[in-house]
Length: 243
Length: 254
Image 1 (tube, rainbow over the protein chains, first blue to last red):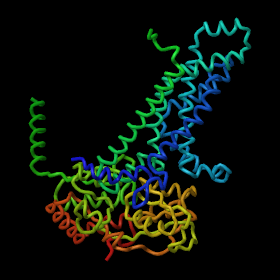
Image 2: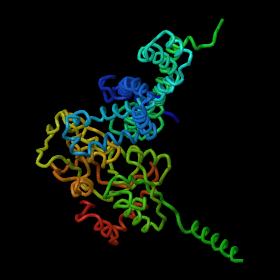
Image 3: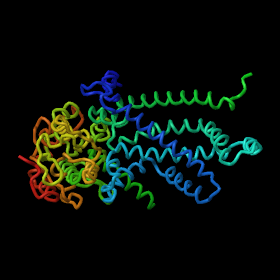
Image 4: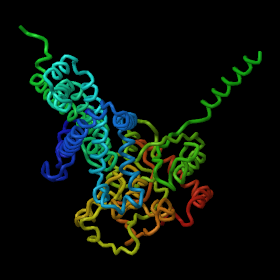
C-alpha cells in the first residue's frame, strides 16, 4: 500500500538534497520552511510589541489604525495576502521600477513580507489582550510606588503581559508553521513545495505528502515542547502550587 | 394522475439513459488555453475539450469533463477520478511507465519565449531564470539543457502564472508549448515586447511523440476504442472543424 522504501529514497529531497546532490546542498524543504518561519516570527514579534501597546492606547486614532490593520490581516486568508503581494504588486510599473523591486521580485521576500504582516497582526491582538488583562493590583502597586506611566509600562505591564501571552503565542507559532505551506504556491520549494514536486514527478500522491506531514508533526512537537519549557520558566508564578 | 405520469416518464427516461449511454470521463487541466480554459459559464472549453466531445460522438458515449490541475492529472487518473486524460499530454517513454497512451491527437513543438531579440543558445540563460510548467516535458528538458549550463528553472503549477512572472521580470524566459505560448501570451496585449527566440525543440527523448490520451495502465480496450475514434474524426472532417476553430495551421503534424 504505502511504499516506505520510496519515502526513504525521497527523504533527501526534503532536506535540500536529492538528484545525486548531498543533503543540505540547497535550502529546499525543511531548511526553507524553518527560515520562512523563523524570520517572519522574529520580525512579526518585533512589530507586534509596539503595535500591541498602540492597540490599547487611549488615543482613538492610534488604536483605531492598529485595529484596522489587525482586522484586515486577520480577516483575510494568508494565501490571498500572499497572492496580492506576489502577483498583485508586480503588476504596477511603479513598483517594478522602484528600488523595492530588487527584493519584491524574489518569491522568498514576498513570502516573508506576507507571513510577517500576518503573524504580526495575530500577535498584536494576543499581546494587546494580555495588556488589558493585567491585574489591577499590579497597576495599583506600581502607581503606589510612584512610577510614571512609561516606567510602569516598561517594568510592570509589558513584561507581565508577554509572559501571560506565552500559551496563546505558542498556538500562533504552530499555526504559522503550518501556514508557511502556502509558500509552495509562489514557486518556493518549502516542505510542501518539495512534496508537490515529488508527487508530480512520481505520480504517487500518498507518500510525499505523508513525509511532509511527518516533518510538520515533528516540528509541532518540538515547538510545543520548547514553549512548555519556556512557560515553566516564565510562568511558574501562575502554575498551581505543588506543596 | 399527472404526478404518476411524470414519475413514469422520469423512470422510463432514467432506464433509457442507463441502457444507451455509457459515460467516459476525461480529466483536463483547465489552465492551458487555447487547449483548455474555464469559460464564462464555469465549464471548460477549448481544443482539448472539443476533441473530447468529438471522440465521444464517434464512440457514441456520453462525455463528462473533469477539471484537474496539471500536476495532479496522472495521480487522479490512477485514483479513478476519471477514465482518461485528454490534456495535451505528450507521449513520453517516462510517462509510459505510469500510464498507457492512445495514438497522438496533435503534435506541436516547444519553444522559448523571452524578450524580443534575445539570442538563444545553451548558455544564453546562465545565472538567469527560466519558467516552466511543473512536471511537464518542457521542465525536464529545460533542467537538463539550460539548467546544466547555469540557469535555474522555476516550476509553476499553471502556465499563466509563469507568463505573469515573465512579464513582471521575475523570470527571463518561459519554455512552453509553441501553440500555448503564441495564443495565450504572444498574441495577447500582455505579450508585447516578447517573442519566440531560438529554434523549435522536438527531441523525442524529452518531448515524446506528440500529445496523446492517457488511460490507466492495462486498459487496452479503451486505448483501441480511442484510436479508432481519433481515426474516425480525422477522416470525417470533425477534427479539421475543431482545429479550424482555434488554429490557422495544422496542429496534427506529420
